[in-house]
Image 1 (tube, one colour):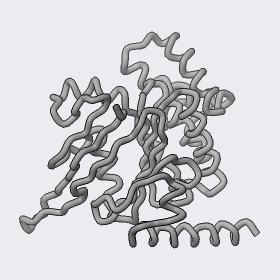
Image 2 (image 1 turned 135 degrees about the horizontal axis):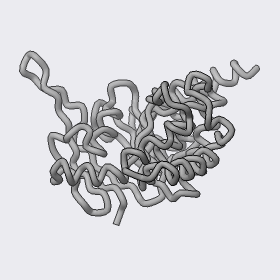
Image 3 (image 1 turned 180 degrees about the vertical axis):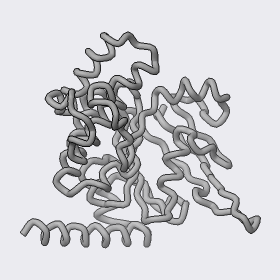
Amino acid sequence: MALIEVEHLSKDFDVKDGSSIHAVHDVSFSIEQGEIFGVIGLSGAGKSTLVRCLNLLERPSGGSIRIDGRDLTRMNEQQLRMERRKIGMIFQHFNLLLQRNVLDNVCFPMEIAGIRRKDARQRALGYLEAVGLLDKAKAYPVQLSGGQQQRVAIARVLASEPRILLCDEATSALDPQTTREVLSLLRKINREFDITIVVITHAMSVIDEICDRVAVLDKGRLAEIGSVGEVFSNPQTKAAKRLLLTKKSEELLRESAEE
């Protein structure tokens, strides 16, 4: 059984004139335990709506989302809160608590969970070591680079001990070198903690760097799905071919910047 199963997922938004916007329409796919799975599409393709449906931050208009065979769409709020503990999320903007130092930022979710302060701090130091920031434990977010702040955000998510990590454009605010470093860290976390990772991005280079398989979204619909090698070497749809051209443009820009 797959860890994540999405079947006929749809999400509509009502607008003022009485019509509806179909942000996600009849999307189905599954993700295996331990996989790094990418979802890619141009702006407006429905990527962020899809990822917010995966943990029911957005309640779908139709379809089902099962984690370990349990349908999230049939759960009440109390059951959902319990299920969401398995699902961590990192964003483009790091959402750190500016008044807390790095160590206390990582301790925060453990404090909420009622873990003793001494135990929480000990575990937090371990997570900071895992992301390569043990020496920054007493620093504050404003003293860190963007890449370091994202590492703190990742350590904070690890503190919740999730089985699934959703990454919504998590590297889009970072420069190319820092992006590669953060993606390398995510690969390490995937291996060492056995965390299944879902990467939402508009950048083919990110998918190429880290993902095992990729789903291509186009105007809210699933256009194509397959291994990264298959989709990149032999795209079957116009949407995938457009993204491949975008990837080639990204590579040319990166090569020019490095010269």
